[in-house]
Structures are given as structure tokens and as C-alpha cells.
Amino acid sequence: MSAYCYTVVAEAETREIAEAFEAWLVEGHVEDVIEAGALEAEVIRRDDGLTLETRYVFPSREAFEVYEREQAPRLRAEGLARFPSGVRFTRTTGTSRFATRVDGLRVEIVPYARDNYAYLLHTFHPGARGKRPCVIVDPGEAKPVLAALVVHQLEPVAIWCTHHHPDHVAGVPELIAALGSLPVLGSQHDLDAHRIPQQSRGLHDGDELELFGHTFHAVAVPGHTLGAIAYVGEGMAFTGDTLFLGGCGRVFEGTMAMMHASLARLSALDPDTRLYVGHEYTESNLRFAAHVEPENDAVRTRLAEVHARRAVGRPSVPGTLREEHATNPFLRSHVEGVATFARARGSAPNEVEVFAQIREAKNAF
Ligand code: ZN
Ligand code: FE
View 1 (tube, rainbow, N blue to C red):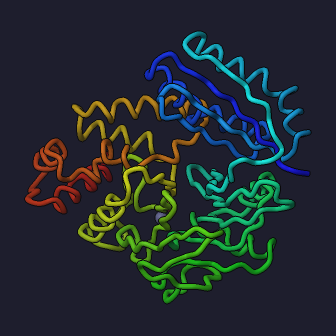
View 2: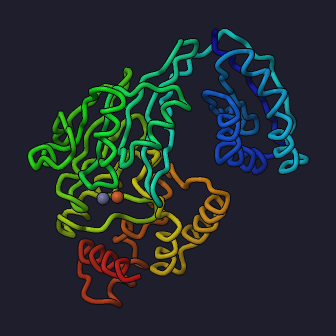
């Protein structure tokens, strides 16, 4: 069995149409094709700004043919209905040999409980046989993770925990019972406190983690808990309950100054960083953001987008840090509108105090 690569080229008449088409692809369509049998997909916009190339990788030519027969007509019809004019399609012949290496890391999102997310981080090697290695991030429950491992044919090599709260780590013992011994990573603080089940390694701020030829770092982000860490690398960040999309976690163990500093560190990452957060709180967070900054158009637009995604059951993750900079009040203590909101609720002489006032207001919202 060898992987099968298939490319669709779409030429849009204008840049606006190209942008809308690209958004439609990356915000849902490629995920639909993956659900329908593809292993991997990537969307590339050519330098002309008008041509989009979408490359799909199927496990085999046979799998692609099944997809073509049973799923593709419905999925293509959705695209044609959405873009009845302005986009011209060329379907290039598939090939079983790869001209380019597909080596990006991929993240499977595993929703569980009411609003939690675990993640499976893995890489795809074209033509590889059998199961592919992955890392499990924040398994608060074992069963949904075990099911996703089967669906995506993944074999865990480690468990990464962002912090010790049971809704992020309670699935660890059952996973290890089912899968055999696995390294369990968390902060040195949580290891010393013995509060992540079966933790085998304690991470310090800045520790490097090598994963499938890619490098990640542990970033200490105390505030929600004293042992909270984020896993950052390769253009992505797993932020646990420190940074949410449109919001942040409650400050349980640390101080407001600590949480503010932790969020500032995450906020300083590359703006294109994709954020994989611990909970699906985005919609209610953005409602609060609109309350803080009623004049902020970016908040309103994003709230509508997220609402539409959630209405059809799609996760709002991953977001980008760029979107957070524009919409998340907890990263915007320096912005006048946010400071004004905070001052109206008490003394807010500096950014930490502004942050603290906003955090208090959110607790009561
Ligand atoms: Zn938590
Ligand atoms: Fe949590």
C-alpha cells in the first residue's frame, strides 16, 4: 500500500474571491475531506494571490477511488453552491509518488466531557506503513482518546500535561493500563507535588523536547496553577487553561501579576502561532470581550464566526495569536478601551491592575 496524492487547483477571478475560497477550504472543507478518508491536506496560495492549490493525501489509490465515488460528489456540490462563479477548477491527476515531502505536524482534536479538548500531535510520513507515532496532550478522559487513536491509526509515544487539574490528567492511568507504559510529562512543580498521576518527567521553563525531528519548548505559565506549562513549537502552542481563545483561565494558585506575566509571554510568540487551548469557551469569552470593548469590530466579527462554527458543531480551535491580539481583552490591558472599562470598576493604575479588574469582572459576568 502506498499513499496517494491528489491535487485540486482553483483559480479565482479576484483576490477577494481567492481569500473567501481559501477561508472556506481551511475553515471546514479540508476537514470534511479528511473525515471522508484523506489522511492529510494542505492548502497553498500561489504568489499570484489568485491560485489555490489543495493537496490531499489518501492512504492508497483504492481509498481515493472510494472517496471519489461515495463522498466527493456531495462535498464538491457544497463548494459549487458556495462559489457558483468566480472560481475555475482544474483537477490534476493524482500520483502515488510524492514530488514534495508532506512533513508538517498535524493535530487531531479530541473533544470530551462538556467542553474539554485533548490533542493528538503527530506527523504524517507518506507511504509509511502501520500506525504513526503521536503525543497525547491533556487526556482528562481516556475513552475518547483511545477511540481517536484507533480512528487515526496512531501509536502514542508520550503524554504531555499542561497542569494537574483532573479534567486534564484524569485519563492518564487508564491510558497507561490500556496502552502500556508511556512517559508522562508535566512541570517539575507538579512532579514535586505528586499531583499528575504517573508523571515520569518534570519540566523546567525552557526545556527542549524533541519530537519526530521537530523541537518544542516547555514555557512556564504560572497563574491558573503554579505548575502550569505550555508546550510551544513549530508554529503551535498548547496552552491548557492559561490562554483560551478570547479569554484566559481563572487565577487559582498564582497571583494576578503572575498570570498577567504568563499571558504576556504567550502573547509575545509569533502572531501566526496556532493556539490549541484546554476548553471550548470561545463563544462566551468573546461575549465578555464585546462587553469590555463594545466598539471593537474585530470582536464582533469573530464572535459571529465562532457562533456559526459552533452552531454546526465545529470546534473553534485552533485560533491564532494574531486573532487574540485583536480580540482577547486579557492580552489587551494596554489598549485604551480595555483600560477604560477597568477604571470604571475601580483603581487601575497599571496593566496588571487593569488585567486584575478585567479578570474579576469576567468571574462575575
Ligand atoms: Zn485547569
Ligand atoms: Fe480545565
